[in-house]
Image (cartoon, rainbow, N blue to C red):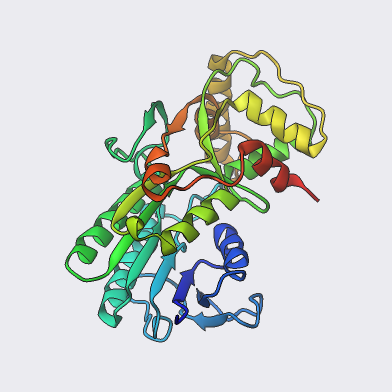
Length: 325
């Protein structure tokens, strides 16, 4: 049997680096598309420089003889945004860049396109469990760009012989993860009392090893074609419990003070003011506080039932792997 040829975009990123490590154990021909020349990839991986990703990127060389595209690259949240028009950048990279790649993939005969979207394409907060049938109401520029990219992919693929799979992970954690989880870890490492003892919420997460495993399943499983899947560890956890588990794995002291959530919201507003005055990222802002206080619950039963997929790691195991030396 001829091994399938896979092109990965964003292979140098957090998720991509873990996926590439996993696929090294599988019998695939792997090519990676990069923005600039890089020597960080293994010798057996074909590295192709495509430059910046937008509506004009030339994918011709990168897509040659490719069977499956795994599109991980994109513009994500930036904690200390410097761009004067971030919404336009999300549109350029996540929407137009993805549409361009999809179009060129169809033109050269790619068989399957796996797109890494985000739960942000639906919402950032929800007290009710989200399913694939829940209404999409993205409330950030990032989430809106991901949803539009999904819609373009579905529309274009439906007019061709190329199939697709869309994955919507919630907050991804693991060794080397950036973003809000990294910010929380830095706070915990300071071993100072944290004012989160009265938070009562539920949030779903996904360990990067579980997310990678779901991607690999979607490569091979025929029932993954033309589907959207929400993916999570399958365990919901409160912010205080998450902090306790992280502190335990870091061997840090953890003291959670019983501070009213109303006071925390005011601290977030104060952080917004500091950021607007200084132009620098504050330790906390209203966005950070909302995510610490709010719930976001994901029901990932669809991928489990249709693909018979089970996360290989529990959240306890995932956090242990994240902080192991």
